[in-house]
Length: 272
Ligand SMILES: Nc1ncnc2c1ncn2[C@@H]1O[C@H](COP(=O)(O)OP(=O)(O)O)[C@@H](O)[C@H]1O
Ligand SMILES: [Mg+2]
Image (cartoon, rainbow, N blue to C red; front, side):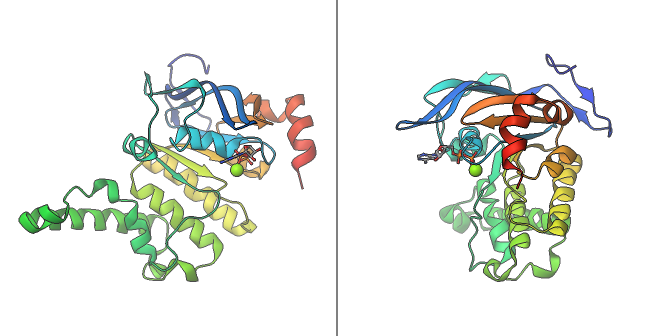
């Protein structure tokens, strides 16, 4: 069912399309450390794809390869059917890929609204000079960007904190603002590095719901790294399992859950 470019419908009625992103035999080294060893997998249009594995398995490194933060020494990245040359993160962003970070990277002194607005930078074409010359055009752009950001604020249910400096927010809300900033870029592919790490049960439930809603309402394809196996099983269509830089499992949550290598390497040790 998952071979080729055929689309299919999930049990909950979502449509998963053909392959959007394909990692082919990726190897990434840091000096003597091999963070990723010859890994291949794909991400399909509309899918929620999880990457799991113990600490140090190479999960963040893999997201960093997808986002262009690292260029692998070996292997190929294919996106929308074309081989991607080595790229800078901003070039990857322009292709419609946005991300959040394992450690929150927001401007603590700036308001929620302004932080999310920074996600729109790619849409702000009118520079200072043209703002002076084309005042009307710049103003239209500003209005459009504000409207887009306000929609995201409504969507994430954070209207009441829109003017609050991010530094004053509890952890769970900061993570939500970071999601908002990534959404502001209107990505086709959204990369989430441990979006629920450090959250309590209620915050996790909220974040899970927003991730599902982003996928469903915006049609955004999502790749996420997550430790909570319950969350992974609930959210994801397919799971890649990494251990010591290698891929040890790839399939539906049920397939992965019943894979003995995965049980031995990951579920057995990392469930604390
Ligand atoms: N910038 C870096 N420089 C050197 N080593 C790194 C760097 N980033 C990651 N590593 C190493 O690569 C391995 C995989 O790390 P990482 O991708 O962060 O794992 P995970 O996200 O699965 O916990 C680890 O051994 C880590 O120490
Ligand atoms: Mg990591």
